Length: 160
Image (tube, rainbow, N blue to C red; front, side):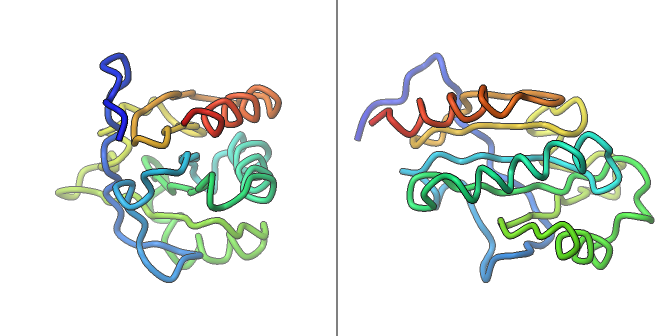
């Protein structure tokens, strides 16, 4: 196994309350060997609904699943009452989202979700790329162009 490059930090594990679109919870530690595309979103975020979620779905459909694992993280930091699990299930069905989606846990009843804090996310949408060795390689807030994301994912897939 290759040594960890000190310039890249290990990606923190996700802290989720539940998972949708997958038979079992996903853990980053179990995904070593694959590139992970993590899309953090809120279903009431216009940038997420119009750009981020469709982009994540396209990535999920385009890249081989044994090479690239796309996962969503529903990370709610506002409008908590409107974005419960039942609403998220309906949202995923209506928008035909087929990749796994974790629901970010709210630790100790705080307003900010746990994984959002661990990754120091500024808001949604946030795109995070994790390499095959579990290292954080990209952390982007806001909309990122498809070509730029695709090129960076392809580069990470090509790394051995």
